[in-house]
Image (cartoon, rainbow, N blue to C red; front, top):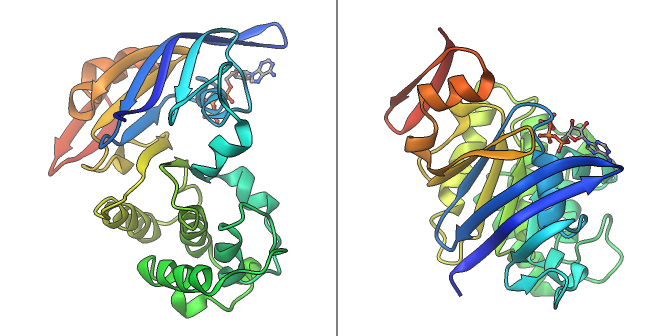
Length: 260
Ligand SMILES: Nc1ncnc2c1ncn2[C@@H]1O[C@H](COP(=O)(O)OP(=O)(O)OP(=O)(O)O)[C@@H](O)[C@H]1O
């Protein structure tokens, strides 16, 4: 199946307010997307819908083969989606070790209650290695730096072999080097044979990697532009998105943004 996400004429109303309007969006396998927009654009609302926490008021949503309203089971769907977000980070138990947190991803639980199999333990160790976290695997999560924590969250999200990995502003609070290390980790995950589709939510064009083939710009709950990243992230589009003149420059597959 080629479709990962398909939204057709989707609008979402919550508490009497339209948060999303007329969203059409098609993510296919082997594409990785950036979701970009200012504060309040509706990114979180859109993610909540993709994870089946919100149901569209109007329109049709299909995520990983589940058609909302017809055959989707929220719990089953969520098992196929890995999430790295500040909200998840706040829920974790600070005294759990990095290894336990990664392992708990196999059960999609906060804390470890079920007995992990040997294969799960090995996978957790392999992921800790892949994400260069092995050296602090036995440390309590609360003692880790923000950059170390984010890589642990990515490893945790990958424990359940997700088909879709959502990264919601994963570089918040990271210094330049920690940010680049995290971005390098995503680039290497993308090389895996069974790499999940990546959906990367950000406020910073500097974080848009060459692996992010496509971008959706969201403005006030509407799709402002969508398409190939290098076509979408351009001076004209972003100036109109911000209602402010900016200049976008592309160099070696990475963009920079500054005010004119
Ligand atoms: N239940 C609700 N009732 C009314 N308005 C809401 C509700 N939930 C969100 N909103 C509003 O909808 C808009 C979109 O919010 P959302 O959190 O999706 O934005 P966002 O793009 O994720 O922003 P940020 O980048 O700041 O995280 C905001 O103006 C927010 O105040």
